[in-house]
Length: 236
Ligand SMILES: Nc1ncnc2c1ncn2[C@@H]1O[C@H](COP(=O)(O)OP(=O)(O)OP(=O)(O)O)[C@@H](O)[C@H]1O
Ligand SMILES: O=C(O)c1ccc[n+]([C@@H]2O[C@H](COP(=O)([O-])O)[C@@H](O)[C@H]2O)c1
Image 1 (tube, rainbow, N blue to C red):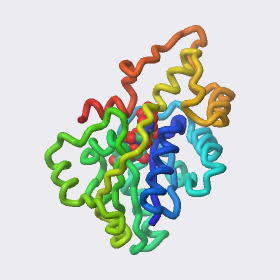
Image 2 (image 1 turned 180 degrees about the vertical axis):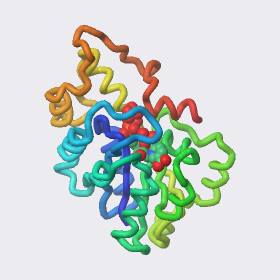
Image 3 (image 1 turned 60 degrees about the horizontal axis):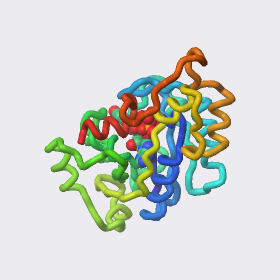
Image 4 (image 1 turned 120 degrees about the horizontal axis):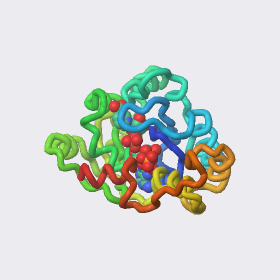
């Protein structure tokens, strides 16, 4: 079984990396592929371009064999729909290999707003990682789907190629890319929120600097209007 973890990764941070590693170990995944999106279909477009986000991701996983950068979404023009990514992977990997899509709790709460969510569940399992601020979904249909598909036996995921939901407790790291971008834009340090080489690349590229270096940006979790974690609060 392999894991697939999509995101803007704008930039990749320890919240992404630590949770991916913990799910990989918990489920005995051969690898977790991290897939930076090209064109977001559900949120603002990333601030850093795809090439830089991919380079930062590659630097972040360079010494962790179980985590692998996969650039297929960046190579695909148009909206980065997860169902298209999974369809492409299925065609490559065959119908039988169990695939497990990793999503943060906040992303899962909005899962039924995704493009063709039931087709996604026909292509992969879901591993939902609890994230600070994300509670179980309020949406009744999503709760029902969760109860119907949920398993607490990891072997159930190995026994079928797709269709089950696994809830994974992970170390709660209250880190978001939004907070990192805002720290950099505000001239504050983002060190220890993400790997040093990633921070160095972001600073050298200047991609998160304020349009005018004199402007300051707020740096409070309360003001993270673009943060997925914040959206998780809203949805929960
Ligand atoms: N600290 C974290 N802990 C657990 N999961 C996380 C964490 N940060 C992000 N994720 C999950 O990683 C995936 C990709 O997230 P994304 O790249 O949007 O990062 P983000 O930090 O939420 O970014 P932004 O602040 O720009 O919204 C999502 O499924 C999200 O829920
Ligand atoms: O395919 C969709 O409709 C869809 C809708 C929302 C999010 N996604 C994917 O979910 C992943 C996490 O996105 P995010 O920004 O909500 O944390 C990322 O790979 C997105 O492309 C996908």
